[in-house]
Length: 309
Image (cartoon, rainbow, N blue to C red; front, side, top):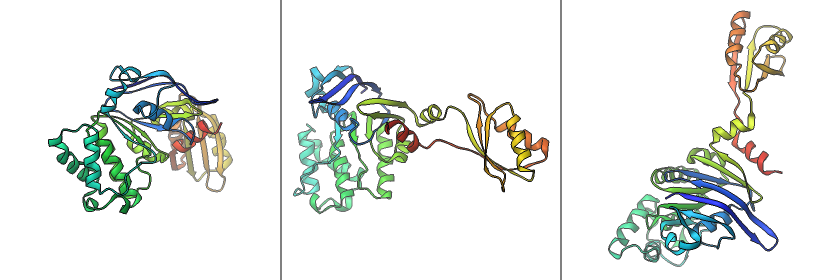
């Protein structure tokens, strides 16, 4: 089911938490929803799930308005909140059975769904314990299991890998990728490498407004504008090499990095690549090209540049 957000806003008194944002998430797409603390991520996700009411604007799920059909649409949504509220005194199996019943799973299918979630979320070894006896990582797995117990078309996951160790993160990441082939997934996280590994598209929100929307590659291109490469040329005199580099038609500027080893930072002109010209120059001059490394802008840097203001 597609999700369409139309001019969505939410205010708490004089504070605007979400400010007229619009975007769409399609079936089979995993959207990474990023932003600093207090940016409006959790508020937006709570409005999509119906956990809190919509302030202004509207949310369409499968073409139907949450304002008009909210109770019915909730059946199609699985939600893992950021704080993952659980009944700590309940055994895992009883809790998942309880959740399945709440979500309207048919009685004759509840136990099969519970067993499936236990296997999918890696709870087999802990399934006979009470939730309060579990580590934080395993509690997070229980939260994921309850979100998926009714096989929803939409998954809203707010910080789903909080408290997981690196091995568990890889497993949950793989699980989300598999789920995302058939479902609509919105994933909030502060682990930026996880976003690149898991999500098809990234949306960054800051102070209630969308400041970026696109793939990681698209955001990098928008951030850098022109190509940046690091070059190390063996032999040759440093100043002669620098002068030759500055004359190449595809290079906007060449910055010395290390004069002893002839290392340079090359900024290509907008819309152009200088790699072929650099290689040809070294062939003509008889220089050895020791390094030619494209420099990608890190997603962390893009995030900081967009959210520090």
